[in-house]
Length: 278
Image (cartoon, one colour):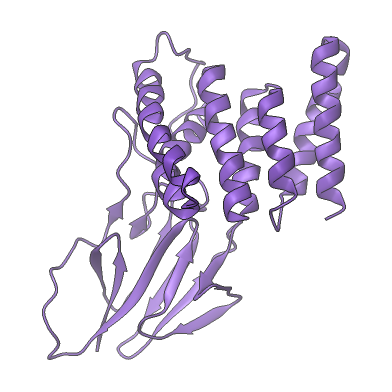
């Protein structure tokens, strides 16, 4: 018996041994998805069986819609959800029909001009004006956001999530790398991420907003806070520690904030209280 992982219309051969999935380039399947941890899940392949295990990821691993704990035995046809990506385990008998092989390592298509998914070395901050890759990110995001907007309007939240996972990941990776992201691009990314949180019920998309603004050391603008309030009432889990750290850092800057900025800070404190009572 041979096993394959069906992902994005490709069948990835699962050779006997371990098969890691995550954002790290060292994984056999590298996913450019902000909901995926660097080493997210591990498949262990034997001659007659495949097991799946969550490697302590933030958002977990689901099999047929149920979040797993520990090592779980998989069956042919099982649907495995890692981040916003879904894959299916396929079993092929020795005499089974031949399927076109794909390389073991696969990476989601990234936006033009974006570096490798492994974290770059931190250097001096770069503005949009002197960083052409950030301009390309913004341009590409505008195009994909228009498509995702239509998908959300039609109630196809998971289609919008699939479209935006990669460009949203690029914005967050740039922010983590110390690059300055324009306020306009940040707000657009944050608003779409908040709407994805509301539409899918996944708290990780709300966490995305907090991490993005925390990394840039900026206040979340009013339109994004409005979207977050909607999201916080719908999602099932929020990274409360991440939110508290962000609010705590802003609290230390409170004397330097303008009256309008202090009002935004008070609304963020309200979000913290809302998340704390869930």
